[in-house]
Length: 322
Image (tube, rainbow, N blue to C red):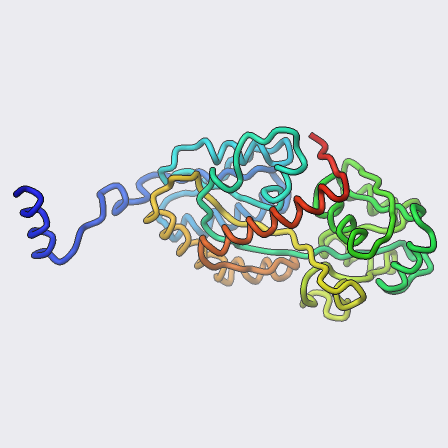
């Protein structure tokens, strides 16, 4: 009888009100874990997002930097947080690579997170030293095949986009080139300009000024289509490697088990944030493309990227630095 009476009350009122905790959300500041050091692009982007998101939610969103172990320290902190909507975090490219690169990962990328939204993607630009007698992707392939293991390419560490973009290129073209890891991106650029390395792949805004100044020669962007910042530079795919694509990417996630109503709310507000002029104009100027969409879209993206880069890492025999 109590059950029937309760059902009758629901029918008469015409709706079921949201639980008080969800109806009032958020009642206090939200922590945004960023798994990298202050000052880098994930941190800078996240601080912009945090400011705008806080305005929409009516509560401060506080950035908490947790760098180290190829982002695993930060990812574990997100996964182990209370799933109450008061901890969210930035998830980027290492989500798709760490389980293949590292001997032990303290979280499961497919089980321990509730994805909120894929916010951005950004391609790399493959460039060479002008001393190399190559002017296009097809010429680079031919030169590399004539000179196996003679071309050196640099990166800021094993397993990042700088490294994996060239490893993918090698696998898709049947070429052999030697990876030389450095501690930082600027060292790589200096070595290529000096002719001690022959090629590199890094984000467009880092490489393009050196191309414009004639210190480096651009061969192709790693995106699926040309980008507004460099419309005259072809994609690697159209320049000779059909199907080739690499983009760095990022988005936001919460611990698994976060209430679905909160996931829906955060997804809606984050979509508003990345569509705002304050974010969109700033990102486009940096070669970053705003994305957006549903939590399901981000979940599918992470799954696809994980499968792709796990295969590349295993085929290339790559081990991480941690």
